[in-house]
Image: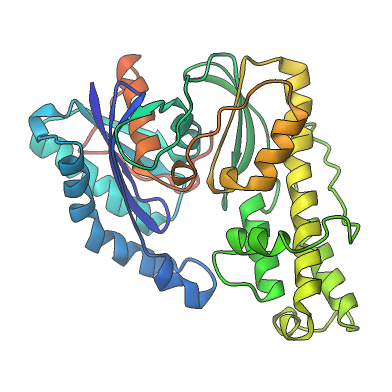
Length: 353
């Protein structure tokens, strides 16, 4: 079966066609990141307008790249949550309209769950993709790390899972972005901090790890505040000194050491919990998804500390994309999951797993 996946939860307008949940036939992403860069973060209204402009050509290109006509498409999967309301609305209304016009079954997809299904893609003829050789085998331990989400999930099978823990405040990607702002590094913050960290000493500064009452829960707000206090101290300023003025007083060497120390502790925080969950549940496979899943330090720490080979998908499939939505849609169709009503499907910006 061939499923068209549509993803518009944030600032990427994306569509892809996936065959049988494992073969990537096309993957098209139009990002509006350059429009948001000067604001230091995603502006919801700008993102929604960009989706409106891009959604039709992105879907058409995805169909063309996959060499598909509408008669070849068996179903449509679309992100209905979580995400920005205006962005989700563009994708869902487009998918609803296409499902009605072309008489295709429609599947509503949880964006966060979708991130893990990128790891089920194992083959493609598209150039410059490095995919896992084998699909995950259940039971699966999944770590989702992105700008909006940090979660640990244990899957007994498709659609049969327990949410073990999640962040109680900032997501790890959000913490990277906020630290980047403190250090005056360009948006998006995650790649900027990681690039700067390469030049720094990860053991230069001692930063705290949050101790949570929930065994598998995360917290990054305290770490972010500790970085702010550290930067103020390094500049010889008091706690009321504005964070926006710190970067001009910090040397490149200080920024590199702060970046490296922050990244080490932030990554250790999620890896510690992942190792703890692995020891308890003994899954056959560990997979990671979300934008931070492409972080080299995260991959290095997980590889070093877990006693099995981790299924890392291509870095292009870690950020938001239609392929992960289409892959999950394939399994929804295969396993007779509930079909959405194209006349009534609504968005759910705060949807959780």
